[in-house]
Length: 391
Ligand code: APR
Ligand code: PHB
Image (cartoon, rainbow, N blue to C red; front, side, top):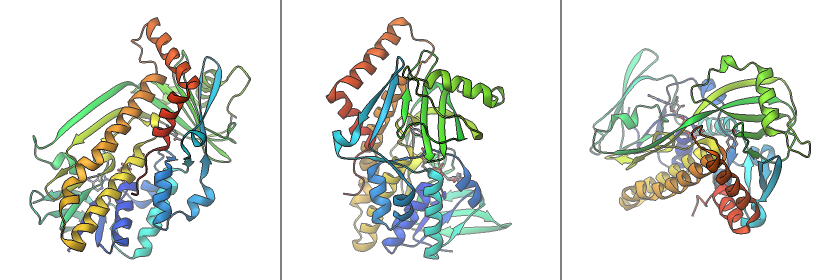
């Protein structure tokens, strides 16, 4: 089999790239290790920057997003028992949209199916070959049969634990990494959101986040140990801790309801440079991971694949290679800006366990400054709503 771009991974990066390429008349094959249902059901983040909403709209996938997405003009930062609203829209003219990654994934799967171009799920033993040059091949097993896909380019969209990044010869890329001494325990609850906007909360007991998925579903997180055993957290204990952290002095607290799903997520900052080796281009989580505090992961993935689609389109239209050559640098500038922002939000709001009383006072002083200075609020707002993707 032959295609122009072999896409490894059918998550948001892989399928968004596939659709962008389709619109440019470029052929691709998507190879995904898991089943379609598994990829859709996996619970992930849910905040879309304005730029990602604009991109989805521009490529004809904005209809359900516009109908069901919850547009938020502000966020709340809570500490010392008080919520402070940051009006991002007033400060930047832009907003965010709460729309679960699962919903984005469903829209992308449907769009891919409608193109009639191939996606193979549950592929096994996938390996990359000859990608130092310009005739790369991908070998894999599907339905008990061995296959080889010859392509012009390979897009490594297979997430942090995928095979593409580790296939790059040692010494050709550099990894930059930081792990954090905490994780997030997250739940989805059948409860109407008690606030119209997100609440990021600093407390002496640790960080907590109030978010949502829909008018009937609340999403909540609390800071926990990085290797927290979820079995040690019966639902009552989770609610007890969430209410302790989130309740504010004016009596505001999240509505309690049946827990639909729960899990623990680790926190990591990771970047590999460059995001390319020969004809292999890494995109999304395969190239970088951010801690979830800034809600940047999915948006960065979308920005990567947009840049890649434009570079591939220029190559196929006019043989130009300059945009392909610039791919890594173009993406990395946004990636590092988001890394800086996610690290900053994370360190401001979490307790690492080794800080002293001075560090806590410093965190509170930073939160006080952030919520009382227009300049500081604008800086947060500008980064949170994100920078344009199309342009
Ligand atoms: N072969 C084929 N597919 C693979 C392989 C492999 N060897 N290894 C992993 N995959 C698939 C995974 O099953 C997954 O569906 O690649 C996909 C990668 O998807 P994600 O992990 O969601 O990564 P990405 O598409 O880059 O999405 C951006 O940023 O912060 C996050 O939550 C955000 O997950 C979102 C991500
Ligand atoms: C979420 O709703 O899952 C969410 C929101 C904001 C974040 C992270 C996760 O920063």
